[in-house]
Image (cartoon, rainbow, N blue to C red; front, side, top):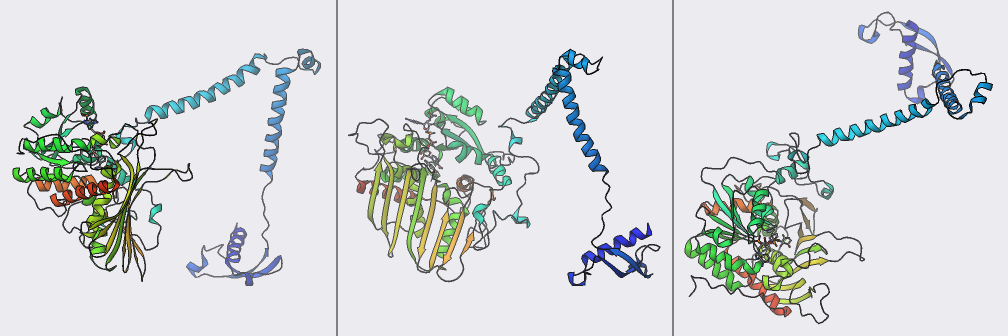
Length: 567
Ligand SMILES: NC(=O)C1=CN([C@@H]2O[C@H](COP(=O)(O)OP(=O)(O)OC[C@H]3O[C@@H](n4cnc5c(N)ncnc54)[C@H](OP(=O)(O)O)[C@@H]3O)[C@@H](O)[C@H]2O)C=CC1
Ligand SMILES: O=C1OC[C@@H](O)[C@H](O)[C@H]1O
């Protein structure tokens, strides 16, 4: 024992020692500290020097028993298999000739492997059955979250690279969206409602309402999505059940007449925005109105005039404007750190194939067209970032939507793509691009959506990737002409970077949630820092009409509705 301990200690020391001190011979005599009698000599200070013969490299005294047993097991397995084959297949006379007078009934040669296989299969089956039985359904909350999926809270000092400003030249794009953030956005906390929440009614069982209103409302204590109306009562019923909306109306008029409703959300096709917003205002309701506000600037002005006259809140739902990301980009540009703006370019382009031919967006009489539906965002964005309206139009090009199997002389006035450039005040130029049908690269490589805004200034450039849906992912890249580039993220109003001091927000708030916060504040008469006002909405539609005039497609048809308040 004592010798072994010394030997082991010695080996350790020798292995740790620098190579130059290693003896080159296979055996050496070296002085050692003997710990055999007193434990660790260095600790107890009781050292004894001894000379011990040590073998190098160390002789391995490994038993070969395991190799032997392994060999025996291996050969026995094969032997057993051969015996099994003989038992199963050899005719009786040969077995008897071999001197074997008794052996088990050969049925067992089939039954034993058969049962074994069945046992294995049954075990697998039970395993999967048990797993399925205990897996929550796809629409169960536990399929996407549990008590551990918490988003680190940067306000309490917890670091999360995804939502914090990243290092310059880092590769933040490779981050996954944190699960906690997705969970919080999709399954927001539901605080108790205040005693008198604002009751919202939805016009139409529209596809956008769950994202733009119903989900954001869950986390707003002052909002209750109270009713929905659809042209078909059954459709309204199904929608209400799915989204836990307490009340259903069988037509839009009935919804507007509901005295319990304070606010109307209008996500009807663009061509119906004017009529139903006017009717809602006439009924004394505030209106959250989907973009684009109407088919013509004249209609937009008339709606806002009526809202003003009645003291009601009307907002064109440019949700992206309420998110800190776009406001941070504007703050960077307005701060002058990149010098004077030279050019702004905003793009909203989606891959071909996401819209069917009967979509309202391709329907001229319902206010369809890509410039209306998607182009209104880049139009609004370049005007917002330059704090100005265009002075003139430089150039417009478009591609027309042709319904499938339409005759070659089909006269379409619905654009599936529009590109327009403008002269803005102060020698600034702007370009907007919108595209419903970005074709696959080389005809087969799928495209990603392009939702970008880029600003070129005299002293560098800045851009925001995903300016429309920054709550899910975005990057602000600032590249000064001299100095280091940097990337930023803005999920909440920090107050310290020129953006939204004092404004409420959570990192998981979607653009729509930020928008709802401001809308409710406005209705409640509270101060609102971010807003899309009447002149903004009127000018946006005015320039959309002007682009359509240049492209030769003309404005979308004016509503035939005559308001009771109009003379
Ligand atoms: N803010 C945003 O991010 C987005 C905004 N939008 C805007 O929201 C609006 C609706 O878009 P979306 O939800 O995608 O559209 P949908 O086609 O899903 O919904 C439109 C609703 O309009 C109603 N409607 C009334 N009359 C007609 C008609 N003649 N033809 C078709 N529908 C009719 C239907 O209601 P009913 O149930 O009564 O049949 C339908 O539910 C548009 O203005 C669009 O620009 C759209 C997507 C995103
Ligand atoms: O945000 C949007 O994305 C897709 C569009 O078709 C839609 O109408 C728009 O608001």
